[in-house]
Length: 628
Image 1 (cartoon, rainbow, N blue to C red):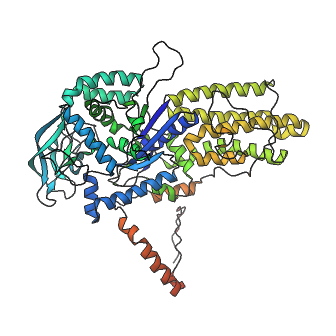
Image 2: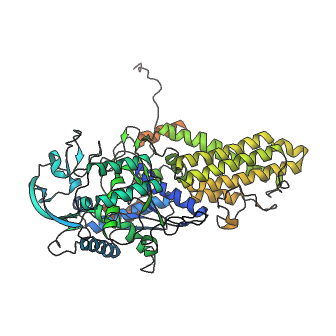
């Protein structure tokens, strides 16, 4: 199989929050890691979506250029994903020459095939202060459908209806809050009405073949049922992919025409050879041999991860664009979508600064594998889920620490204490002891369920199965009691511990997609395996592998997880209860070196001028009136 995995491109106007991570990037990373462990030829790409009004406006507010804003946030995104142990094959960006070349070529193909129309579009113009046409997201007003009073100009966040800014009731400029006035501007449209019959046939087949989830199917069919209309693909901006058509040189392509093409251009940037990307993007999936058999399907299978609000652009707009080129493109096979992850007191929001953001997670001192586990075990697959600090504490203490940490710690310590840090021999195969055969049977049954769940992109179900395998390992150790057995039958005790060590190795492999490679490497080191490349340690086969050589020298025991106490949770809740800054911090970054130098010089001149700050959180237990 050849599988191309994409994560929805995060927009480069702010720091990603936990909801952004689980909605696309982290989920895609889990699936791509699993594919590699199964020996699948996989390419996993993502990158920052950098063009559009949001970038222009952010740059204006910060008094810098759009390119400087993009460079600043691209670096922040890359650093956050690196900390979260996201294993991209390539993390790129859309503000590249490759993006311009590929996007303009796709436009010319669509234009040549008479799927582009022109129309005078009445747009809202901020006459009072901003003196410019207002793109969709920079108009706010009341949704004409549900009455939500803070709907965006392109989509109502409350009911999900797609909008044009002129449809809003009582529209306001989101930058200065003044009422804009209508003005006319000539724009280009992709004729979705003309493409609808062809698109409907493609959707009907693909959503079945690719096993789309019910939410993706429902949202796509709603668009089709209501009838597709020509959709504007240009904007009156300067920051974007230039429109190459005569008479429209002062415009750029609209972000939702331009951005999905970013998947292609980012893939092009991943290879030194300028044509290799075509092997992935112009190699559509072909059906399996009609006569049956085990032959794999030919071509590339495209699996895309996103939040539910991005579905129509990936199931309608982008596929329609590719169909309109009349070229053979790799089209989406499976759409994996999520609902929303909400914060304790409401929704995560980049614009309102509510919730825990990626850089906040780094600063807590809690390792990335704990964050990864919590987000994935609460992945909002069928309904919205809520991040709470008590639940976060419980998942760490009761599931990671008491289950996985306990299994690994006991097994490695048995090896160190009773067997001089050497792996004992397994019992002769086939196993005959009832507890051994029962364990192997249960684990192999769970392994088959795990593979089926992962193949179906049911990530939460697969994670729970993997945690169940760890519980089986704990139960096996508890039942066989090797700490007692070693006193009376050292050989049998060694067999038990050797089997437990293989369970530990399997648990590390099954959890690696979820908790990351750095986490799994800790366990492999403790088992004496030289990283994930040694002995194909992290491969996931159809049955539990029993191939670690007797006599393998184990490594030094390491604590995988630490308990999080109530006081720490109270402090974290208080710390993240306020709004986050909406500033990019770009000026702070520019001044960092100068500030550090000045501070160092001041400290050298007068050490007493630098005072430590010690802030602590306490709980008020009792009040007594003072006698005085």
